[in-house]
Image 1 (cartoon, rainbow, N blue to C red):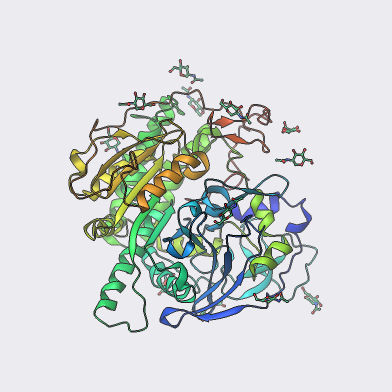
Image 2 (cartoon, helix red, strand yellow):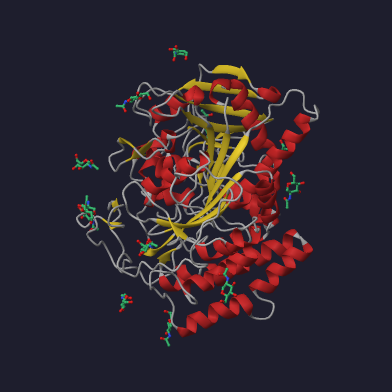
Length: 581
Ligand SMILES: *[C@@H]1O[C@H](CO)[C@@H](O)[C@H](O)[C@H]1NC(C)=O
Ligand SMILES: *[C@@H]1O[C@H](CO)[C@@H](O)[C@H](O)[C@H]1NC(C)=O
Ligand SMILES: *[C@@H]1O[C@H](CO)[C@@H](O)[C@H](O)[C@H]1NC(C)=O
Ligand SMILES: *[C@@H]1O[C@H](CO)[C@@H](O)[C@H](O)[C@H]1NC(C)=O
Ligand SMILES: *[C@@H]1O[C@H](CO)[C@@H](O)[C@H](O)[C@H]1NC(C)=O
Ligand SMILES: *[C@@H]1O[C@H](CO)[C@@H](O)[C@H](O)[C@H]1NC(C)=O
Ligand SMILES: *[C@@H]1O[C@H](CO)[C@@H](O)[C@H](O)[C@H]1NC(C)=O
Ligand SMILES: *[C@@H]1O[C@H](CO)[C@@H](O)[C@H](O)[C@H]1NC(C)=O
Ligand SMILES: *[C@@H]1O[C@H](CO)[C@@H](O)[C@H](O)[C@H]1NC(C)=O
Ligand SMILES: *[C@@H]1O[C@H](CO)[C@@H](O)[C@H](O)[C@H]1NC(C)=O
Ligand SMILES: *[C@@H]1O[C@H](CO)[C@@H](O)[C@H](O)[C@H]1NC(C)=O
Ligand SMILES: *[C@@H]1O[C@H](CO)[C@@H](O)[C@H](O)[C@H]1NC(C)=O
């Protein structure tokens, strides 16, 4: 399995003292609570200034003990500008598998960002403007979640954790610290496998904090969340049925209302093909063609040639065998997906940028590895954005190459009258909108095939997106946006989120959506950005991104160096959002 670039970022930043030799003192002074379904919860109130800057808005973090040696980290923020006891509750998780949800919290839609000097900066477009927000690191070992905290170091070649006998950093080791014991048994290895513990985690939180879960529950995610969300939410609905039949006496009904998925990875058979569509034909909307005829033909053959990616993936679907699916996935990743990385030297998560792409910045990683912050939030382990034990556990079952029932599960959610929003930043190649659009059609929500694309209005009077919606199901194409949409289009993302969770139409936010609602417009979304925001030189690592011009800020963007004409040292972990190091 590919080593994760993200977990190596601590090494890239080895000059920073706080990333090194840091063993975490076990946190104390927990408040203990027993949640629903007898799930034990340990938490602390997080002091003002550790992310949330407003002292009237409370924040809590801690652990949900979902199983023996399986502890899920959570960080909760009250809704702003309203009584949080009257607000809905929304969970956000990132994908990977193996990516920490701190990515979403600090780079996308949480209450704060961390700047180049490690300073906490308020995010006025935080989704906590509209809802109570909980961020959960899952499955076990991801981010601050842990199995057993052990001393260890990060192996420079593989990016995996090597344990040490005690909290002394030997001379040969780099990136020493306290980590979650990397045991592939103490985590999940499939999409379906994450659902039971996730549900238990929610039971724990909702029982420990009933004041924040009195109203509706929403589920928001991105990327590999296209796998996680449909199956977890289907599981929540099934548990609700058991609760209604009084078969789970200690469990709490979770009032699921909305599911939002950004640039999701749903159906690899469709989405591996979409890499060709996005780069070659019909192409992306940035008038940017990364490959010449020869490379285009090579990619086409790797997909459609006899016994190649499409055939292998079909065999994975038909056989369901771990070895077949793993082999297929590695083949498709190396020979189809990574053609962009290898021959165009571009960022899979934003086709407009060459690699290394400085956006979104990763300054928050050092922030989360500072002893002060770790003490404030009660962390047991050091922070890494991506966990290699989890990605290799999933790699061993070939989960990435499986459809895993995601489309069927989305259909169930639609028929259960849940609001489902599939949205996609249209500059992302990794889980690109052309594939997402085909998946949205496959869900076949009533009336969707005859709905049309219409412009989404926004309070800044700029059209940032187009939506096709029928009833409570919608597909949203977001302009000038990479994979992590709320980073690139913060205002539009918050308004979309607010409209969705309040049952309003995505296009205007002015209508309450009922069964017969349908957007009108063209069958295809034809707007083209053109290539004015496409970068042809690598952008300086300290540059900032301007969400008005949709480009690096001119002063900060002083070009640093030309894209090196060589393959990057480490293969990117798939669907892991941080590849910027
Ligand atoms: C322990 O937690 C309580 C309640 O959250 C707090 O009032 C107290 O100051 C904390 N004590 C220490 C030593 O941190
Ligand atoms: C802080 O939060 C409170 C409660 O939500 C709100 O009334 C107040 O306006 C906020 N203050 C600032 C400076 O945003
Ligand atoms: C970071 O600190 C340096 C030195 O004080 C300052 O010049 C720079 O403007 C700061 N950056 C930000 C984003 O505030
Ligand atoms: C810690 O482990 C090292 C071996 O890595 C050993 O040499 C050292 O004596 C141990 N230190 C303590 C305090 O046990
Ligand atoms: C991993 O955890 C399982 C379950 O606790 C345990 O049985 C197994 O021995 C562990 N494996 C290793 C290598 O420690
Ligand atoms: C890719 O393009 C082909 C040919 O136009 C089309 O049949 C297929 O549906 C497209 N697939 C995706 C995922 O866009
Ligand atoms: C096509 O691009 C590849 C990779 O950049 C290069 O090696 C090859 O020479 C190009 N072929 C032509 C015909 O330009
Ligand atoms: C995946 O996890 C399940 C449940 O823990 C285990 O039975 C199975 O052997 C694992 N599969 C692989 C390929 O490791
Ligand atoms: C939709 O927005 C695009 C992009 O701003 C614009 O070119 C187009 O005219 C708009 N269409 C309508 C019907 O308003
Ligand atoms: C940008 O697009 C224009 C118009 O489509 C085209 O003429 C030009 O060659 C493109 N520039 C680059 C660098 O691809
Ligand atoms: C961001 O872009 C807008 C529009 O081009 C421009 O007016 C503004 O000055 C830019 N901001 C910075 C900080 O460069
Ligand atoms: C990146 O930008 C900073 C400030 O904007 C500048 O000091 C630095 O020299 C630039 N780095 C490179 C490699 O151009």
